[in-house]
Amino acid sequence: MGGRVSDRQSPSEDTVTERATQQDGTYPRPQLVREQWTDLTGTWQFRHDNSDTGRAQQWHLGTEAFERAITVPYPPESTRSGVANPGPHPVVWYRRTVSLDSVDPRRLVREHGHRLRLSFGAVDHRAQVWVNGHLVVEHVGGHTPFSVDISHALLVEHDVDQVIVVRAEDDPRDVGQPRGKQDWHDDPHKIWYRRTTGIWQPVWAEVVPPTHLTHLVWTPDITTGLVHLEYELSTSPAPGTRLEVTLIHDDRHLASASVVVGRQRGHTAIALDDLGNGHDREHLLWSPEHPVLIDAEIRVGDDEVRSYLGLRSTDVDDTYFLLNHRPYPVRSVLEQGYWPDTHLAAPNAAALRREVELIKELGFNAARIHQKVEDPRFLYWADRLGLLVWGEIAAPFEFSRTSIEWLTGEWMEALRRDAGHPCVVTWVPINESWGAHLSGSVPAQASFTRALAALTRALDPTRPVISNDGWEHTDSDIWAIHDYTGSGQTLTERHYDDEAFADARRRFRPGGRRMLLAGAEAEAETGGRRPVMLTEFGGLSHAPEAGEKWYGYSTVHTEQEFLDRLRELYAAVHGSRLLVGSCYTQLTDTMQETNGLLDENRRPKLPVEQVRAIVTGQHRP
Image (cartoon, rainbow, N blue to C red; front, side):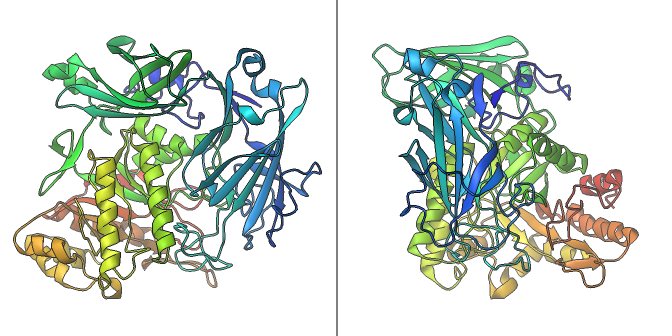
């Protein structure tokens, strides 16, 4: 069951730096990598607990095997898991035994006082974890990671199995949970899909020194030539403990820093002289066309980790989205990140790389991850191959004190996890008023979207924030619009220039919603501006076979009609004097949603080169 970050892999693109290739995309936490780790995915014991009696009956202490086997990290609703039971099951249990020698072959824990950390990429929605009968961690939030030192719960006798038990609670009827596109009905309907319960991202273990890094975030400032490193340690360091950082590009030493760390959490800045040289600076900046990654080697005491960062800035002015201080046209696609056999879980690490490659091959330079916090390994490939990412969170479908607490907590964890990825350039905490569906009429709900935007900026002031993607903007840095008309002429009429926008924003959106609320509308009325993007449009669906369940926004019947309609819609987008970005719905078919450019198995419906020409504007009138 051992895993290892590969030492070398041939680069697939000329722009990939040599040291960036030391990762092969399988390590679950790509910006904080340790050489030795143990992959704990694979076969676990499994059991449903529909009556929720497992805790009372102390299943975490039992020695009898659970009744089923499951392949982790695939959710039990999926066929790849081996369970393939999509019915509503509010509680599930997992059990796995491992030997201490299998996760610590060098006996560092038993003989040298090292620690053993157990990590989960994501468990939906509420998790409890026991090791050898000891409760070691509880976590709420189905899309975000958690990690725990389990050393105190280990049995250190030789050849004694360590028993890991996980209880996952995911109420299929509770619409207050941040659930995104997971259906609360027994069967999928409209735009919602089958559920993803329990473990759906990697599980792994690492042996670490007593004092070790547990978190880091890179924040480049290309204006001042500084790279800021925020770090967190497992415990308060001993006096005199030093943090040593080395930054490398193409086997060339760029900068180093060595500082004494006196607290468990801290910050340091590293000066990059090359950013002061106008010529060298351009060669180091990250963009989709030039995805340069800077490698980092970090040591704290006996702990050594590898990381990487990208040097770039992202911002807006009153008209444009800015990448590295320059206007950058955004060509995005809506990415549900859902596979037919594995649901929200990726089939494997290679599938995440291929997803990024497909998006780029179709001519897009960005992806809007929709109602999901995507696997960090997807973000690694977006960083490495060059793809902008809009970061979003799965929404609840009710407004309550509990849903506010759950969504806010999970969103803060998502920001913490992904803030160091150069590919992530915009944050989207709310989509189409989901979870705040009366924002236009209930001040408390509008206050929530405004507060989430402000909280996001407080935690990360370096990226634009969209308070409510689609409509009912309260405090957005980008006015993002959803418009699913099937007519290119109508798109032009609504989004051609400022005059058209002024008219369009006064019209009610779907469900009687306004485009801008309160302060945002007042700002627009007095001449205030934000960049305007069409962040959902298209949704063209092939006509399904008779009797087939399907969902789409417009229907086309032949490949030629599909191409013609796609060309017509993109002609309106490229011809607009107003729009500085767009996001086509969507990349793949997803269950009954048949409006993808690819089918659910990632096969193109249209010739890729023709789609690319349309998306990039090569056929622009």
